[in-house]
Each structure stands twice: as structure tokens, then as C-alpha cells.
Image (cartoon, one colour):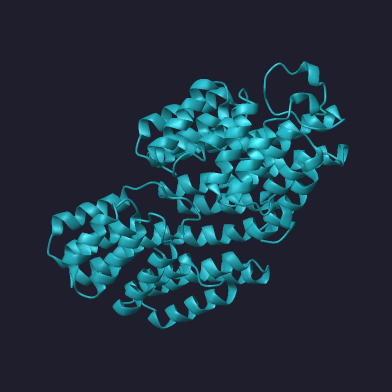
Length: 488
């Protein structure tokens, strides 16, 4: 990590800082209209009421996942008060177009200047930075300290909840539910809870939470986007289209709304209309990466409709654009996806070339190992698939990752051992398209036709398609070759 070495904090130093900050009183804070605040919430340091107004508008948009508009408000706040350190920090956190290292460096740089701001600002900013870096226990210690200092601030309560337990855990769900009960009018918490409930299997609860979110902020595009997405996941595409349309009418710059319209139309089988909305999104892309990802999304929609050759052609165009823009992460990912697409298409000679090309843009990592395992497996190379699966397991060691079992199951299946493959795939939880695709293949190998059809139906009935989840569409496509094989 680059930046000020003083801010490279250990778990111990984070805990000490969180404890020490609590001895400071609110009287030390220099704030706008301080006497007007009756609740113990975060107060920011600026002499400009107009700058403060833009700051809170930016925070509201960041809370509600409209990052480009949030960044614009933070920019306006900074223009009105160049010494407004918290505005500069939040701008660094949410401005589109930075990679992870660049964002870390900018946040670190601004944190150094926050030592002259209020105690609360320093505490909250440091928590946000630690959370961004993935230092969950450190971030939680800071959020807990901030909650003790500012118990009436719902944003801090959400930060504490999101660092409770693991993603999808009952502990985190309970913490988020507690936030919505304590702060029932804080809309963003209902949005976060809705997705947490959905991905833990409580779909009815998720729909109720997202309805409450939309009720609280009906004029914000993201409330309609979230409502639309969860109803899209439920297979209610007309309802989804209606609310995605409201989102972009509320603000035509709301880029994600166009993606949502493309997704809902694609799932409804209206792929030409889906590609039309991707084209309409182009003028509103906040970054070059966003514009180029529209090409990648177009490729994915071709994959979804079963046109693999056209999908490969378009995805190659996206890869070239990512390379031209020096977006190494997305260039690498596009080549990983191309390796799998070529394997499904039967162009096995191109698989290794794409995997090697990905490594020109990004060092070997867990993503490289997982996509390699799938590409090798679908190419019939059991040894290479097993080695990549083992490398993926090592790369994610220390954390539960069910996809390890999906990849190991594929390797065993390709090696001609469907019984052991079945055992591994069952251990995966069978919650993602790839595990269901491989299990359908596995059941066919064991002449269990009814079971194979059931797993295939699971994939085709899954509506959790997003335009940039290329793996979703490729998993569906992989069954085409399996069905051809057993039809002969």
C-alpha cells in the first residue's frame, strides 16, 4: 500500500485510536451552526453552509448508490471550501474511475489532513478506509467507537452492521434488521437489508424491505432500481421494466438504470431491445471503463440468447478496448471469459492463448485460477482443471468458498468419476449456475435423466442475471454441448 506510513494501522493501533478518540468532547469540534444540532450525529468541519449542504447531498447519493452524482456534490462542496477535508475524503472514496490502488492512495492522502478536523470525522473516515481495505475487525472497532460517540447517526449504525459477521450470515442480517428498527426512516438501511435477505433466501422479506425503501425515497432513482432488480430476480420482468424506466426518468444520468432495462428485456427474451438500451446508456457512462463494459454486456446478451460465436466476437472487441484504455483488470477478465467461451464453442486451441493473455494484464490470482479450471474442464483437460482448482483453493484458503467444491467436482467429472464429482458438487451447496450445470452433466453421466433435467431447469429458471455476470450466461451455454453429447 502506498501513501503516508503513519496511516498504515495495525489492529492494535486501530483499537487504541478508537478508544482514545472517545475521551474528546463535542466542544472541540468546529462546525457550522453547531448549536442547531440536537442529536448525537456526525458533524462536519466547514465554514460554508452551502458547502455543507452539498456534502450531505453527496452522502445521501452515496448511501443510495448513485456514486457519480454523489461525487459531483462532493466536488461542489470542495469548490466552495477547499479546506473541507471530509468532503475531499468522501470524494476520494466515491469518485468513479479510480482503481483500488489509486483510491487507497487518495483516501490515505486525505486522511492525513483530517487530523485537523473533528474527532468524529477522523473516526468515521478511518473506519470507512479500513472497511474499504477489507480490514473488517479494525473497521468494526472504529464503527463501534463512533456509535458510542454518535449513537443517533444511522449511517454509522449501518457501517457497524456491515462489519458484523460475514456476508450473508445470520449475525449480519440481525444487525441490519436492528438498524431498520432503530432508524425506521433511514431509507438506505432498508435497501441494504433487502439484498441481504434476498441472498440469504428470504425472498419475501427482501421484497417487503425494498418496498419500504421505495416508499421512503420515491424520488431517488436507486429506490426504483432496487425494487426493479429484486422483482426481475423474481421473474416479474414487466414490473422490473416499469421501475427501471422510472429510475432513468428521475435522472437520465442514472447509468445503472439502463443496464437494468437491458437485463430485464434480455431475460424476457427481448434481446434486440436489451442491446438498444445498452446503446442508450453510452452517453451517460461515468468512465471509459463503464463505456467499454457496455460492449462486454452486449457480448453477454449474445451468450444469453445462445449466439456464442457473435458473443465471442463482441467480447474480443471489449478486450481490445480495455487494453487500449490500459484497464488491465477488465482486460484480464475479458480474456478469462473468452477462454471459457472458446472452450464451450469447441475452439480448444484458443483456450490457453486467452489464459496466457490474461496474465499479461494481471498477476495470477484467485480469479485466474477459477476461470482456468472451468476453461480446462470444459476443454476436457482433467489434469489442468484439477491443478487450477487446487490453486484456487489455496488462493482462497482461510475463508469459506463453496466454489472450491464446484471446481473440484468439474475436474472429477472430466476425469471420468461422476460419483465422486457428485459428492463434491453437493458440498458446493448447488447455489450457483456453474454447480447446477456441472451437476446436470454429472447426472447424465450416471444415466439419471430426471435428475439431470431438474438441475437444468434450475439454471433456466434462475433470473439473477446481471449484464456483467458473463459466467451466468456461459454456464447456461455449457449445457448445450452436454445435451448434444448425450443426444448422439
